[in-house]
Length: 320
Image (cartoon, rainbow, N blue to C red):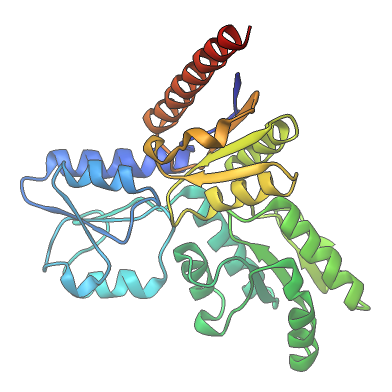
């Protein structure tokens, strides 16, 4: 049995940075440290941080006045900062912002495009915290969010209905690279005025229809690594949190190559029968999956392989 682990599997720098910030803040804080929302989308990471005196809350109302607070990696709308300010939780004092710099970059791109007359469309997941945060900087709840390439028709109708003169499409950082490309191809098949790629530097804001590649490099690296081993594997194991958008995209990427794929959160979910007759095992993991979880999964697969090899040898001896 050969086990192939994808390049760049596991923590990206944005996730590592958020965890480091939360741990450092908690270690220096004598009282309880609060994190608004899931810091990162991984259950094990959250449980480990809870053991260090960090409490995760989904409602700002549950954060006490003047409490030491950390904001998650996915980014927040301006209303979050305002609500925290009303609780005397301010930046450079009680508030510690762990927003990934690459998400902040998307916010800045959205703001500049908006300020230059573009109506902005977001390729993302409507209920994902990053998409919600980015939408705030565009049109809030009125932002048009295309979740799939197949939504190009609705997107074209939205543009025509509102008679937009300048339109820009941007993406949530953790979306599918191929999915984004397909969305642009689909919309260009439906529109007379084609969408052209605008560099991330936004150096030419005169074109009427543009799209900006705002999918982050760590997401691209993990998707490419998964693609490389999915082409060779007999079975793929993708590890990630249940709510992890980038992990789910890795599983979808793997399945697109026709290989049997299992999306798991931990080693104990592995089943021996998955590996019957399988020689090449691929393992990939989302950007919020810790190395210890990846290692446990790999070791469990090795144990399963060793047992199956022993059983095969015994059966051969009996039949021989």
